Amino acid sequence: MREMDDSISVMEIESKEDKLEISMLQYELKQRNEKIEMMQEDFTTTCSERDGLRQTLSDLTEQHASYKKKSEMLSGRLKSMNASLLSMMQQQEIVLNATKAREEQWENLSKLRREKLKSLVYLEEQDASEEVELRNCLVKQTQEMAAIKATIATAQQEDTGGM
View 1 (tube, rainbow, N blue to C red):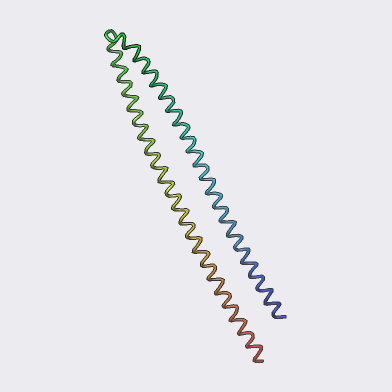
View 2 (spheres, rainbow, N blue to C red):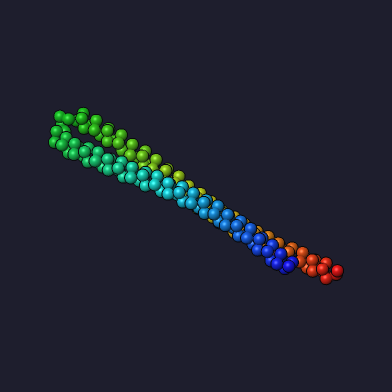
């Protein structure tokens, strides 16, 4: 009868351990899903930024083509329109400076995104390391509990054997 009680107790402990492990795995799954959602949002944002940059580049290309066409038309009238040409050159310099500033901004944003990606990779590696530590601790704890159980069983047998 005692062996059945012990067997039932062991099964109850194993059931509780299994439930704990299931809960931990569900929690881990939830965290991973949240990370995936965040990464998907980052990906969507990055794609939107890329599309915006493409549109801006297209707009700038159109503007550049427009300025080039105007420049070609004005080259035939260079003597009479020298002041207008100078003004357009200044405008082109402003556009070039704006383009350079925008390129610097894009480069800075790209660096920031790379740093954030490195940070995400570091966090994932840290999470993996912590999971391994937790698993090792749980294995050690399970072994210690088994040893304690064996000691208790031995002590009980000695008590019943001595009577």
